[in-house]
Length: 113
Image 1 (cartoon, rainbow, N blue to C red):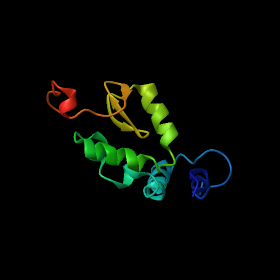
Image 2: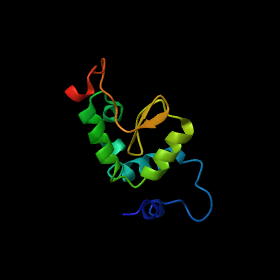
Image 3: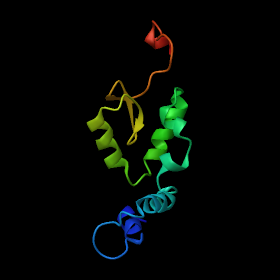
Image 4: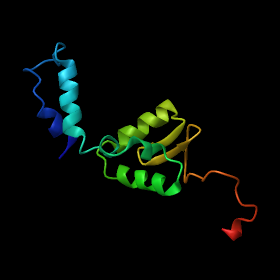
């Protein structure tokens, strides 16, 4: 289901702007509707900020099926997110990196890995 189709199903109370008196209700309603479509809303949030490489790769894989992946990535780049998985990419120090290096000191001999 496309997200725009989902948004059209929310009762806006007629044409025009969203009603201001029930904004909290509308937000809750929207959150419930999209929770199953957006992986970061339906899984443990710690997964997107994990230290372990396997967890980071799992978060990236879950992002690939998200309908908001492009907007999420664009927003993270604009905000220079300090770390975490955003839009299917890993951010470290505000920039996108190919893979997140594990904690600890790197090996002196890269061929030993």
